[in-house]
Length: 135
Image 1 (tube, rainbow, N blue to C red):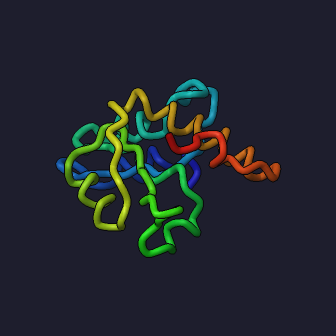
Image 2 (image 1 turned 60 degrees about the horizontal axis):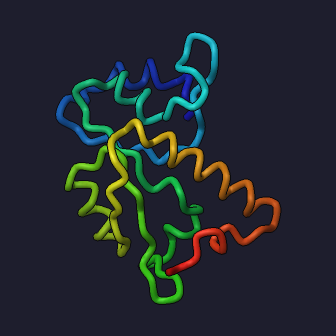
Image 3 (image 1 turned 60 degrees about the vertical axis):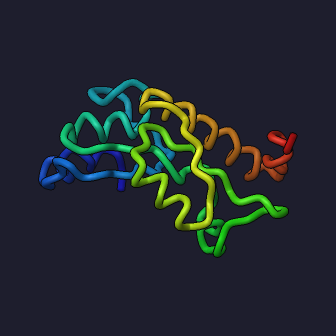
């Protein structure tokens, strides 16, 4: 869904008390929208003020989510969570991953920037996983 469609969609739903997981990587359009770099999760939170918005699941390719569980060289995939209630941490554990608390929604822009950088490297043929080697 393009971010421009969020206004109408989110305002038409009863979202008070609901948890919304934002797994996107597309920054909102410019103009009347938030400035570039504003995380989509923050935009969603502004459009659904009664909901609990969490940025998660945006750093892995869709094929990773087809793995059961997503484990690499014996290590479960780590999933950073911004604005994460315990319910989403439980969901991450349920799919075989490790939840990583990454701060509030203001830090979601860092996850989106990380995804843009890593995906760009993968698309150019570089092994982006080599950037963050295990200790």
